[in-house]
Image 1: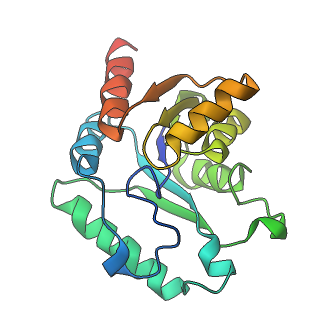
Image 2 (image 1 turned 90 degrees about the vertical axis):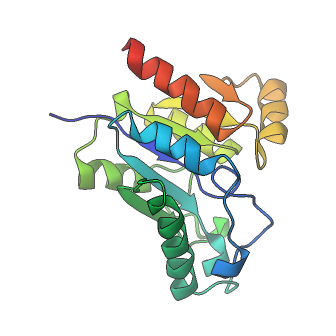
Length: 185
């Protein structure tokens, strides 16, 4: 039986976004990320990270360095028994007009195929307009987090009349909301 997933943005959602993170030494999680993800593991929904990493396309970061950053992420998560079912990233710059850069849906559709997911029972947590637009494009429950670019994104949404399903102050706040939804489902 197919089930939904919890899609997670990386920069600005799981960790501060200082610009391009080019080495594991530059990668640190927000203080509440581990607790929030441990809570989300209780839903039994797979946690899948989907992230734009145009630093690769710009020549700022090597694929090997990105792999090391994600290895550090996995090591941090494993300390609280959290595991990402999948990690998908777009290495392209916006000018490439690829189908995998959020808000386009290719990475989500690949995850759907890889993990036999029901997108209609899925969630997306992110801090940017591309995350909100991606959630709309794949028709999943959209959660905007006010970390990273979230406050600026919220202001833009209000200007443009765009809505999201939930806005949380932190990933922990979003996790509590999502757990309440799953319990009531």
